[in-house]
Image (tube, rainbow, N blue to C red; front, top):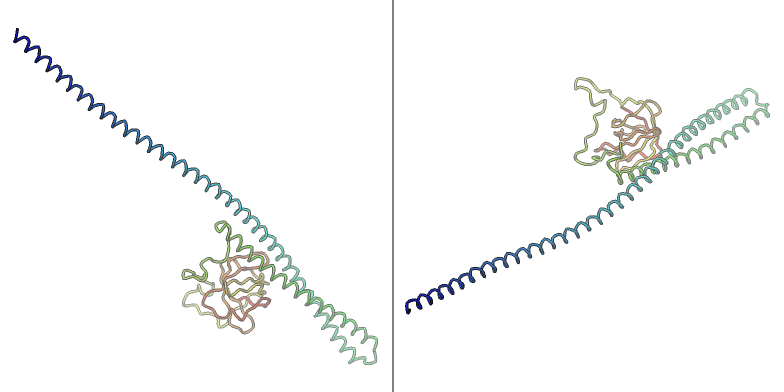
Amino acid sequence: MKMVSILLRLIAILGACAAVAGWVLTQGKVDEANAKLADKDKLVADAQAQATDARNQLETLQGKIKGLDSDLGASKDRESKALSQYATANRNLTSLQNELQKAKSDLASLKSDNDKLKRELIGQRTSAPDSSTNVAAYESKISALEAQVKTLTSQLADAQAQAQAAASAVTSSAATAASTTPAKTTARVDPTYGSSTYTPAVSNSEAGTATESAPSEPVVTSTATVLKMDTSSGIVIISQPSQGNVSSQTEFGIVKGFEKPLRLKASRVEGAYIITNIVPGQNSARVYKEGDTISIIK
């Protein structure tokens, strides 16, 4: 009986130990599960914070996009206005050039009539000195013609001033349109002018071989008028030549009297005027001014 009692006690003790061991193992798994759950909760919180930051950044970018759309619309409006002003100035310049040519033609005709009447008056005085009536009539006609010449000369000066103002407006409008949409404007002043990368176009006279001899004097091909002269930027606007045509990117020379020729390169050719660049390395530009009649040479 004593042995049975001892065995029962040992069995009870072993059962208690097994229960304690089972509780310890179970509690460890519970603690591990709680730790994993806490890590997952932290990851969820971090993801929510990142989602909030991303949403805030998206709202900021959407605001910037709206601002850029507004700026783009304003830029297009400025471009449209600048192009409209350019077109208007271009039409005005063409009209003024036509008026200027007509005024020059009328002035030349009046001067010719005036000279003719003066010659006839001299002939009247020489052949018939007593014919005071004819002399008085001729003198009256001459006075009237001289008055018309003075009036037309004044009108011609006004037309030249207006043409130069219109040419300045064309240059200003072209520069404005170029600053708003540089990729869409065409045939503007060479953007490399004045820099180390600028390469002038080779003129016809310079394209020949070394065995060909150059002419001893420049060959005058036509005449034109200086409408705008800006030596600081190297831009010169001249009227269309009286004979022949000048194409874009063509290099040619202009000369006034016995001055040294000035080499230009055409960057834009319109119906009534030509926008050119002064070829770098020349000091003769200072002798030319707006309103000068110049000869175009090859």
